[in-house]
Image (cartoon, rainbow, N blue to C red; front, side, top):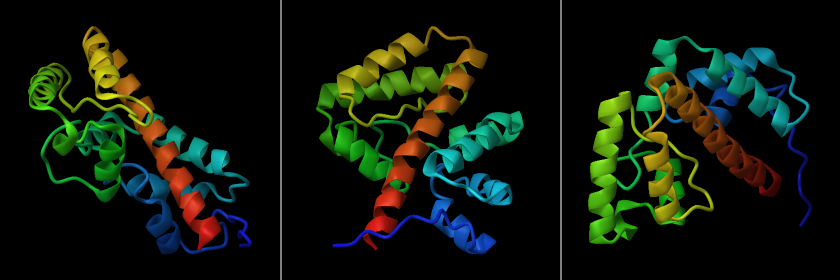
Length: 173
């Protein structure tokens, strides 16, 4: 089967670009809307770098909205299809956790949200529930500013994983 070259939608219109890339940052299509103006992109990495710079340079209100758009790991909540699949693949989805693990995640999530004002965010691809819980415990020691920056970097990692899936879909489609 011949694969198509990914064109990064450089010639597409604004709406098509946002449709294709708007989901990379959880319920925050504003990132793709702003990135569209930075075209052309020569590579996947260039697109991701542009979007990450937009996120890291956004005002604190937008950053906080983006962080709060993420679901808590291991929680029984309605979430986007991308988040549901990511949690399911790593074993931190609520339906995959043992009862005691679910209880621990619930308690840790509550403490984390109380301290920082947004859910614990981690790119969990390739990690176990234990590794995720250990990271949450370590990150609870961060200051609010350290953790906000760390969480935003994790959001960018999640976007990178999601972008890889877009690239695969475009190459196959």
